[in-house]
Amino acid sequence: MDYESIKAEVEKVLSARRFKHSAGVADTAAALAEKYGGDADEARLAGILHDITKELSPEEHMKLVRKYNITLDEDEKAAPKLWHAITAPPLLKERFGVSDAIASAVRYHTTGRADMSLLEKIIYLADYMEPSRDFDGVEKLRRLTFENLDDALRLALRMSVEEVKRSGKKVHKNTLEALMYMEGLKKPED
Ligand SMILES: [Fe+2]
Ligand SMILES: [Fe+2]
Image 1: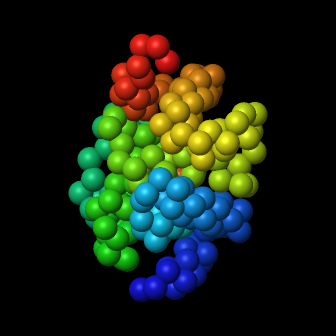
Image 2: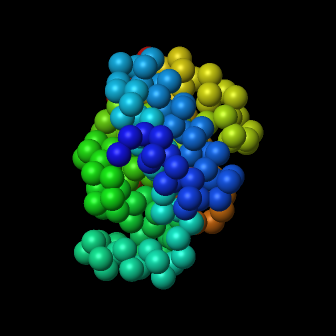
């Protein structure tokens, strides 16, 4: 299936607001892939598809969990916001035959993880700072994302940890591991 047909499929299952967000992630991800030596087509496809199951009901998510034999850990069970990143990858593989690299970028777009691939970093950041996002600090994050991808990832992970803590929720271990990994890469003089 070509990109435009896939995009039209996405538009059918998302609200106008979320479709606009997904298109923003797709364009931003393609630009970042070009800048950082990735595959722009792959990044664009991952971007348009990343929230494909975001508007499903809890019952629909659980149906997919059973269908694809997904195991949710206790933290994931308690965090409905994470479900769409978990149910989307097998669905996208079956429906559109996406690559493992795309499935994995979708899988980790909400939490990040240690030792992320270039595409995983790009989708994580594009999701955070695409043009329709609006929050304190988004301009700084946008600028940094096009200057230094790893610095931007560190900043985004730190902001994410702060935001989750503020909301009184538990920070997912993948996010903490992602941040620790990125901090570990920091040179002492930085
Ligand atoms: Fe998402
Ligand atoms: Fe998103």
